Length: 129
Image (cartoon, rainbow, N blue to C red; front, top):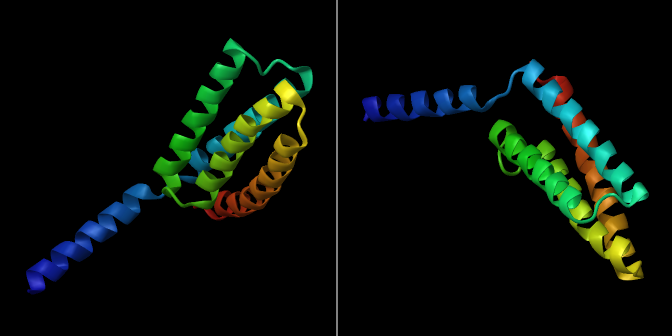
């Protein structure tokens, strides 16, 4: 029984130690997030986010989300922030295509949620050792 408990404790400690990103890795992810967020919003303003460029941009957003999930888990603040940015980008297609108020409303809501998640994510990055 003691061996089983010790084994479980060691496995849990190993998984926890492996999942925590380094300060450098966390800051690099944060910089990539800011660059991609700015690139995304610029593309929407310039109407470059259609066709093949839109697909490439979405792939970059998906990669950013996957990196966050590997570093902080599926439900981490930074993962949520990246997911919200991806969701807002997806919703923007309706606004660019049709200019409808429903799409604009969804985009505004998602932008607010992304802002809340990004603030929490910034705190996580700053507190990483």
